[in-house]
Length: 145
Image (cartoon, rainbow, N blue to C red; front, side):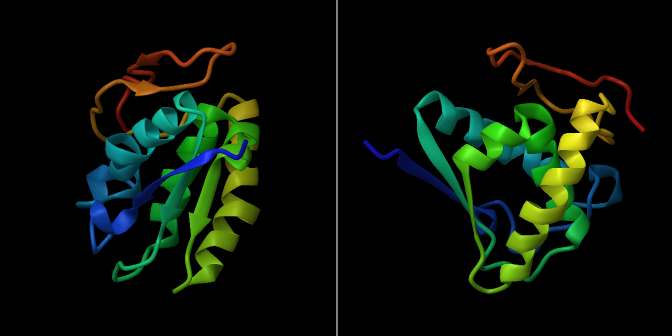
């Protein structure tokens, strides 16, 4: 039986996505990850669904927004789980999907393996992370930069 698809769209978060970090401005990749993407991915995994994220319909992206949002996803859930359970849609700018899948995923998986914690520039509510076949939810990083 094929997995059902749980869909979200960045446009439902912001039509004008901002910079990489929350400290740099509104609607950042860091903020999107912590307010939307982490929880949505966890819910899809928990329900044995695929998560589909549409990048279409916004005014555009800084590559750092996408890198931060989807890189954190790989860091917290592993490259294997992300590749098996995430579908990225971008009909308007297919190069964004390619950049995420060919560059961001690889770089952030290496970062995860090297245990180089992602930077957090704002306080966030607890978020999920894959640890030893479980998904604890807590505040993983407390030192803000």
